Length: 106
Image (cartoon, rainbow, N blue to C red; front, side, top):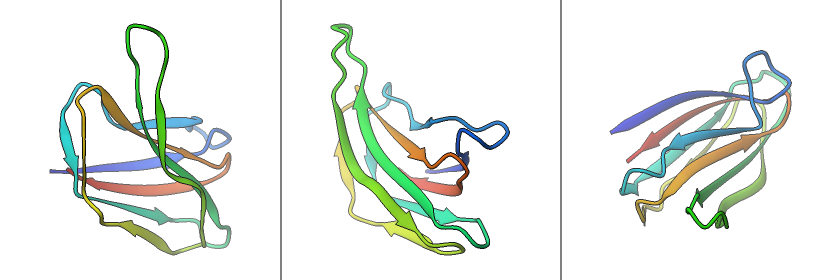
């Protein structure tokens, strides 16, 4: 199944600091993620991570990428599949002014 997103940085109208791509309530296998910088002239900064939200209140976060710079009008394709436990969600954070299209294949 493919999940499609238009992710906007927090300074862009309708944007936010972190976007949930796959909720922590599903056990899933992540087959691939395509990150596309749709800006014409500015690189985008992307952090992709998994995180749980246990009832204990202590959140565990594991980064898949950290502060990766994707040049303008280019893409980053992550194709190594990983299986994640059902209590972890997939999230993305982008720079304040960034615009990223995301396709997640689960």
